[in-house]
Length: 216
Figure (cartoon, rainbow, N blue to C red):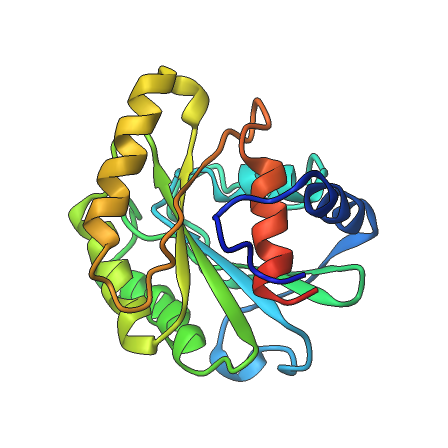
């Protein structure tokens, strides 16, 4: 599947993405150190974002599963990189969240640095998806994450979560403002997706974006 020039996907592409993620998707492993990563033998897409932004819910929505990715009961406590394999041809990677972590500075730096090391050293990483709570927009801590993506030269796309909590006109405004803020970012993908894991908004398009990024 090639990238759509106009920034939209046709019905055929959306259906192909739905069928792909209807195939088996399983938890593969969690890695607590960079030397524990699986071989770089499959294309990967990674999900990053602040603690409590809805990463687990979004991964579950994309894969059509309920409990594939499990959110920690304490925001910011995920300290490993979790790998999920889809159809034996693609890996979804859940990076440690940032912000809000009620842990020591040393511990926080350890698992955030793990995510940065992954970004710098993963040649099979096709795109990262930076999740932003649509109710709050980009925060300073998100800008730090974007700097990490830019420095690692990793293509990343902004995904607005919890879009069902806003009125349609407000989503349009937040999306436009986000596009403006990332316009000069060297590694930022120019399309911003508004999604709701609860309502399913934007999930078909995100699935199609993933397959296009991985050329599947």
